[in-house]
Picture (cartoon, rainbow, N blue to C red):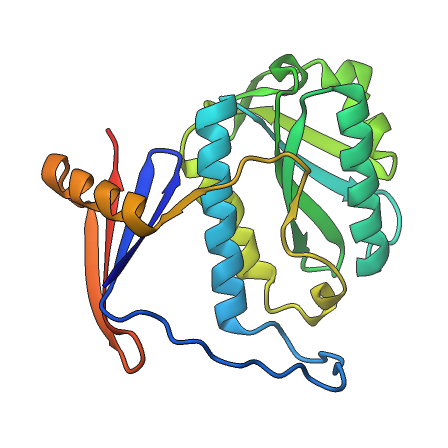
Amino acid sequence: MRFIVKQYGDVAEITKIEKDQTKVRIYRARKKRTIYGPRRSDNIRRTKQICVRRLLIALKEFGCPLLVTLTFRGDASDASYANDSLRRFQVRLRNEFNNAQSLFVPELSPRGRIHFHGLLFNVPLHLGDTCRGRRIVSHGEERKTRILAKLWGEGYVDATKTDGSRKLAFYISKYITKGGGEIMFNAMRMLRISHGFPKEKIYRGVLAELLAYGYARIHKPTTEWTHENPFLGTINKKVYIKK
């Protein structure tokens, strides 16, 4: 029996596996094939899970971010060019704001135009608009200075202040499910994360076992499920959310 503990933000995910994993020899494919179809559903689900976990950590560590949308002024149907443009923007953003961190997800409009939704951390919040619901209460400094638009250099930037709610993680991750089936996006990353973005903590072995028993003694799991695996036996997973 072995335990795996993953901690991200206020969430602790504890997995108990009945059998130890046996060593399996993996053979490297001789020829890499080009992928023409949409991404696999399990790949999309895993990417969405990574997005939520990384954002929950960032929201707890950095606080309130700016919610931004990056759009192109001209033709925006080249996924490879769009991916490179976003990478250059993240580099310029770090040069302008030393501690800036960002996470972006692409979306395809009904007209077939690519744009990006993301969150900017450690960036002045006064750049973004203040909204109540869908109504803009006051305009941010970005509308006057166009600092983010100049760093983007490809078109327009819409910036909005946020309250740092956990809902932001799930709001951004929904675009992965929405755009994961687009064949056009095979030429780019569905999740573009800046260097230095916080990662989840993973514990194994004796320490993971001690943490698992500690959580079980003090907290009550928010969710729990069990399933059978032909190779690993019974797998039990518990999720704890600190309040």
